[in-house]
Amino acid sequence: MSSASSPVTHQKTIIWSCEFCGKKNVYPQTTLKGGRFPLRNPPGRDILYVDDDEDTEYENLDDMLIVLCVDISGSMSVTSEISPGNSMRSPTYVSRLQGVQEALHMVLSSLQKTSSHRRVALVTFNNEVTVYGDGTKVPLTLRDWALVDYDYLKKEGENYSTPHCIAETIQPLTQKIKELREHGATALGPAALISVAMASQFTGSKVIICTDGQANIGLGQLDHKFSHCPAPSPYFYNQLAHYAAEKGVIVSVMTFEGEDCRLAEVGRLADHTGGRINIVNIGTVATEIQSAVADNVLATSVMATLLAPDGMYFPYEEDNHRLVREIGNVTDGVEITFQFAVRPEKVESFQQRDRVPFQLQLSFKTRDLQKVTRVITQQKRVTISSWVWAGSLNMSVLGVHCAQLCARLTMEGRVQEAQRQLRAQQDLLKDISQQKPSPKEESIYGNWISTMSMICEDLTTVNKNTTETDTKQASRTSSTASLSDAAAKVVYQMKRAKSMSGKAQRVAMMEN
Image (cartoon, rainbow, N blue to C red):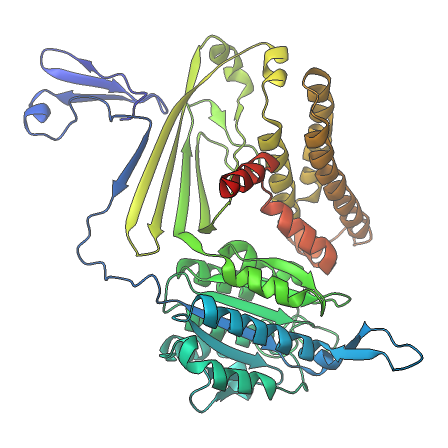
């Protein structure tokens, strides 16, 4: 039952018809005496249920780990000019690795001042993976067969101990970072796996991956320039992303501009865990790492269940009136949108209703591993007036939903569906602007639609060049594989789009 329920009490029975599925539930009056049925509807429309599980172990919220996973392959020696020369001196060049080293020194110094109790571990990768941990013990080196053994890497990471906080380890860690040298291939997949496994020991931990090339050795290999290389598959990164999300680990991925790192595939790690995805250069890498360090998990294992009355459905997701969506980790400011519709044969019956109930059930774990279920029930008015409907639409919600949905469809390879949705949203935006002008929001969301339209158009052109014998699944895989790193970054960021009003409201709250 919910706050929208209307149970009827008779002499010997209680009758309650579910407002969502319509099923009639009949209970004998004796259930009232036994306390197995509520005497009235749950109070309020927003209720929290906390699982009173005494077996849950206490989790110290400060007991989290930051794993810095750094590429030291040969391509990290590429230099960029950071200071132009003149008649008195030559220009100054810095390699990518030098830029990352300087950024890491800044991050460690900042953590020592602001969060001295935090623990930080270092992992590097090239032909092999080296786990330096907190820098106080002999490094663990993994090579050859270990780079293709998923279970072995996972076990090594889960059992690896990082006992000391940054206040105790900043000097040895700083020295290890200073001594790094670039050479060899790019074992990104194995390094990401052992880093996530290390972080999985503590809910709310973070893995920050910084790379400049395609994974070309070991698990998660994506570079298939050589004939003996297996075909690339997103399975490894999907599997690792689900493992990280299940353990409450945030993974952020940063790649260097001008390179093809197959961000569409590797970015799945960040997309599913609530992390950041960005393309950096020597000048911006420090800021991006600092931002990733600052992100905090609010809840893990988040699962959303949305109930609507029978006769409704959720386009692009679920063909019935009950939608279940796995969200994973949630950080501050995350916005989730849903789209619903009424079946054509049910439109007339819904038009005769004054209100329609919806219920959102959010199950999640807090940072201290407390299991919580939040149930929000609301009834929304029904209107048959298109003028009232368009005039009262929230442009912020509409824009965010359009960006998130089209980006998600694109990453799933459903490019044509994304294009149809974009065209529909463009038409709707024009209709709304005539009744409810809002130049600033129209400009923002119009730009989002234009950006996604260009990306989908590019993907459509690529797909037209594939053979007609390609299967549907192969077409979907090739769609995401065709995304450039720059396009993948935009699409992933669109998937996590936030409303401008919400951002302005948070800024105003901080200023007050």
